[in-house]
Each structure stands twice: as structure tokens, then as C-alpha cells.
Image (cartoon, one colour):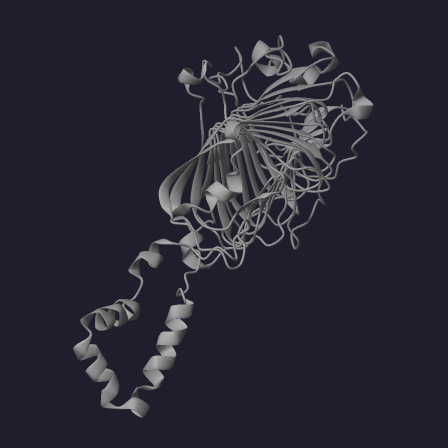
Length: 496
């Protein structure tokens, strides 16, 4: 969306229009005056010429800081606002050309939301060492009882970079709000939010976050992306409630890589433990034609989570009904009750680690492949993975199926509590629980570890009776494990 440009009408121009309309009444008198007085003809010609210089200016009235009747400011490709001199960010923004750059210096205390109504890049700049300082970060302090940054609907190519955004007085508003079909990129930015809504709230459009830290003290999800094409890279999200709630849009993709979602509540207080780290909703998720279909004829996943570290939530990742495919790899979930709850059509969970008090992965519907993971869980009736769908029959296939292969399984109660675990069970590896995000700085994400089979691994234990069909699936921890897993499960009953 570009700002509109209108013609500049003056009082002289209005008089000129009357004079031109009066030409037929006066006949040759006007022409004679132009011939006899060259200066008059030159002035008329100048007034009739278009004001090409106005094309580089923006109509001021509709802008957030504009006033009707004022001459529009001349637009620049780059504008610097120094808040230490009490310069206004919004006024400086009105002087930036479309797709231009606004450089911010110092700490800017805004009296009203910063409204971005055209494509622009806002970049923080360190203070000059000639001002007697060794450098500092540019900070935008949001107003009380209002959002800090608002991107108008339909505005694309908006960037916030190298900034600190303090939205600690937002009240009932989110810190950053994206209108429908708006596009925002956030890079190397720290966001501190305190309020009753979300730190970032995005509708249909595109949101990209990279190399950033988001601290949210609220009860709503820290980031809400409803129908958004979302991409988050190398970012830390700390919150006391739900971390991220995302609904993929029309053919959209949610791609999270090297992301940490950490609870800022004490993990020792179970009554104050946050609900869910990441919630993926399926409403509005559908695909158009062959452009979203792989060469194999299968639909690609519309939720991808890689190299993630989720810490201190009752549920690490919850994938709700309607998601075509969820691909979770090299992801660690710690201090959880349930690691992954899935109702997706297809789930792949591999090369990860889960420490859960009750269940590592619970599949409620669809197909699930769980491979090369490390599971750490409590005593009975806890279990590493669980199938929780109707059994089905020959005429009506099972609502869910699970395939589990090459997973390392560890029990906090010890290997003797689970005779069937041998030779899978062993000492708990440090990689499952290593690192506490509440202690000092930490890098986002989790690199995982190379997976190797335990010594002496020979596959799942054989059936108890030799005369049984060896191809029949085996009941194991309340689920059926084999080439295909299925069966009714009573969550609180442990099957020996």
C-alpha cells in the first residue's frame, strides 16, 4: 500500500481557472495581453505547468501525525530521528519515502501508537561516541493503554530491526498488531511486553521473526498468528502462559527453526505451570490444487518444527484436528506432563528428546511415525508413547495408527520397574535434561545428538507364547507396538 498523492490547488490556481473559462467572453483581448506583456504570459505558463516536484511529496492529512491544510513534507529515502533531542518518531516517519529507511537513535517515549501505513524499514542506531557515550541501543517505549506498533491492513514490506520495544504498559492491547494481509519482518529485536493480550497479534498475512527475544508477562498467548504465513528463526520466547498459538492460513506454512519456548515460571510449582508451549490449530487450513502436492502425491506438512527447545509447560506441543501434516525433528521437550499431543492427519516425530511426567507422545487420530527419539518418563502408569483412538475393524479402519522404531526409553523409576524395556533402558543421558534456561544466557534451539542404537539391541521383546503369530502386534505400555500400532487404551491402567 502506497500513500496517495493529490494535486496542489492554490488560490492563484482558482483565479486562473476562472480566467481560462472567461476566454470566449473576452475574445482576442486576452491573446493581445499575452503578446504585449511577455511577463504575464510566462506567469500563466508557469501556473499551467504540472507541479512535478509535488510527486515526491505525500498528502499529510490522512497520515497519523498529519493535519489538514498543512503543506505536505518533502520525502526522503533515509531519515534520522534522535529522541534525545525530543524529536517525534511519527513526525519523522511522515518524511520517509515509500520503501525508505527510518533510523532511530536513543530512547523514544511515544505518546501514541506508531502507525505504519506504508512500506518502510525502521532500524535502530547506536548513539554516537562523540556525544560522550560508548554506544547504546535504540528503544521505543510504547504508550500506556494502547498498542506500541500498528501495521495497517494491506501494508507490505515493513521491517523492524535492531530495536528494543518496551510495551510494558499496553493494558488490554497487544504490543504489536498486524492488520489483515499485512507483512512484517522483525530482526535482532527485543520485545518486553506486560499486558492482558499478546505481545504480537497477527491476522492474515505474513510474519517473519529472526534473531530476537520476546519476553511476555501475560495470561494470553505471547504470540498469536491467525491465518498467517509464519516463519521464526533463532528466537527465544519466554512467557508465563501459552507460548505460541498459530493457525496456518490458506496454503500457508508455519516454519520454526532454532526456536526456544521457555516458561518464566518456576517449574517446582506445579500449580503455576503454564499450559502449552506451542498450539497449532487446523481451522482454515486447506490447500489449492497441485501446487501444494509433492511428487509422491502426498501433501506436504504445513507445520514444521526443527531444532526447538520447549521447557516448563504442561503440554509441550499440541497439534489439533485439521492439520494436514506436522513434521517435528531434533526437538527437545522438558519438564512437561505431556510432550506431544497430536490429532494431525500425519505426524512425524524423530531425532528428538522428551522428558514428560505422564506421556511422551500421545496420538489421538491420524498416522504417526515416531523414530530415533529419547524418552524419559515417570513410574506407572506413565508411558513413553500412547495410542488413544478407536480400534477399528476390517470395514472401518482404525482412526489412528502409530509406528515406533529405534527409540531409546528411560524411566525415572528405574529399569527394574519395566522388565520389557531391556535392553532399551539404561542410564539417563545428560542430553535429555542438560541446560537450564533460567540460569544465565543461552542460545536458542537445540542441536540434538547423533542417534545410535543401544548395545545389544535386538528389537522389541518377542511374544510370550511361541505358538502365537509373530507378526501380530504386541501390547506394550497400554498401546500396540509392531509394524502397526493400534488399540484401545485406558490412560491410567498399566499393562504388563
